[in-house]
Image (tube, rainbow, N blue to C red; front, side, top):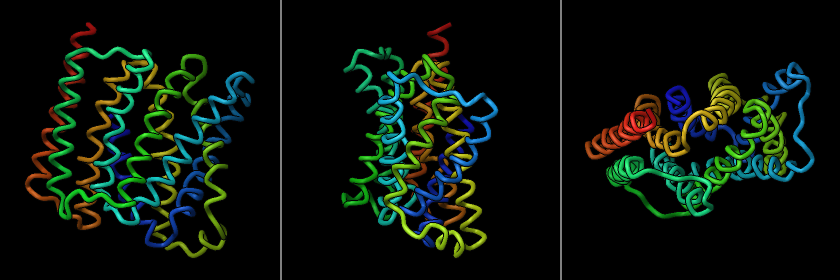
Length: 281
């Protein structure tokens, strides 16, 4: 999860960088065409596994929510929202995952985990309030909050499917379906790819290979190893890394309150990770 949150933190900066050269639909489609190409030889090497017919609908929903709707919300939202604020908005995903899981009676969350989650949420709110332009409600923020809901649904479906299938196979199927869903929102992909700068191409390849193909495979596996509250609490740390990368690479300078909020967020994440591990042992 540490590797994932660093890579996902960097992905917000990469998306914002590529959006200066491509439109939102092109970014999503090209990113996941790269991810799909990465997963193809792995799928062939594993003997071309496929889900059971009864699970096709669930796999389709996983691909659409986790990779199509989520990325459309992120890419169109980041046209008006900076990388740091965007990653803060998406940080509402963990609490949505846990609330939906509890309501569906698929998850139980201890008091220790709830305290850590609330500490992290307080840190996220502090960081958002301390942002350079504040947290404003516009179409971009609504789209990113919609992406957070899509990602929460994706996480719960992922956890259900990885009880029956390998995390690698589930991620492969979902990425392919998500890519098909993204294609109608793009246009002139060969022409767009040809006009990418070397820097834009590097960020696009990074987005497809690391935060998409590799990190989502790791995340699917993590969900089979730890309670969902423990896994999702780590997601709160993504904005911290996004703010660091945005500061160093895009010049999006954080305020003192933003930095304090980031520190509080990390305390909450550490609380859940350490104390739930002790509780389990």
